[in-house]
Length: 264
Ligand SMILES: C[S@@+](CC[C@H](N)C(=O)[O-])C[C@H]1O[C@@H](n2cnc3c(N)ncnc32)[C@H](O)[C@@H]1O
Image (cartoon, rainbow, N blue to C red; front, side, top):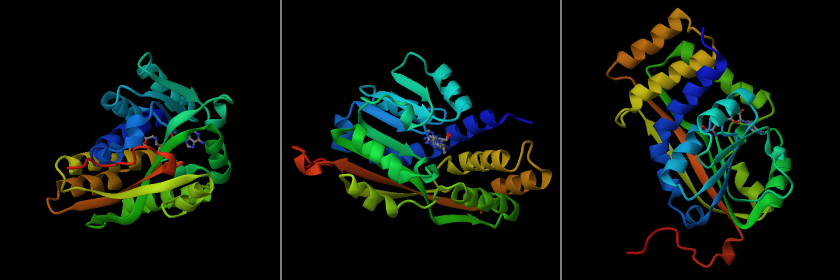
């Protein structure tokens, strides 16, 4: 029987390792290049923020996490390296706090009152701040062959997000909501991770086991463990799942250099 914090820590690491390479094009924008103070709300164990810091050591990260166990793992693991971890929600930050870039990765769907949060964002954003929202895009989700026990648990997990006051599918709604507070939508990239990408099947299998362990219980019930094990061994089994990344910029019209991609 493993502790929830340990399972969640493993799960976030595996999840980030699978999709971070596919998310790289989302960081090839001027607005990210020019930003120094990055706010990562709902950072979990901050494993993802640390991967970003490794690639972009010019940035300073403020990471906020409401789950005390996750926040302490992050604080302990990454102390002294330009990545501050604060326990709580965005209102734990002081009144004069300002960010250049806000990262919301797999957290927007959990926020019960986005309107209040976006009001806070408007008050704490630098005049040309950027926002990147990365979240699930379930439209392309597919597993072959069918895994009834695993998918039953996953369905309940997705329902729970909505029942707890969140919204699983935020992709379409956020554009209008952020426009209302002065953030222009620059681009949305849709990403489909799939098990034909080298190493992805192995890592995704591990991820599926961890999701099941977190949602259904540890250790995994025997039938479920067997279902997942046989799926991993089947050379024709397949999975694909979608994410989206939407980039927004405040006062985009005032940007001197609007170029996003290189000119050749
Ligand atoms: C799915 S995890 C994503 C973690 C991390 N952003 C990543 O991409 O690996 C979502 C995290 O957001 C945290 N969270 C949800 N609502 C929050 C809030 N209002 N303030 C701070 N953290 C929050 C949860 O506790 C959870 O650890």
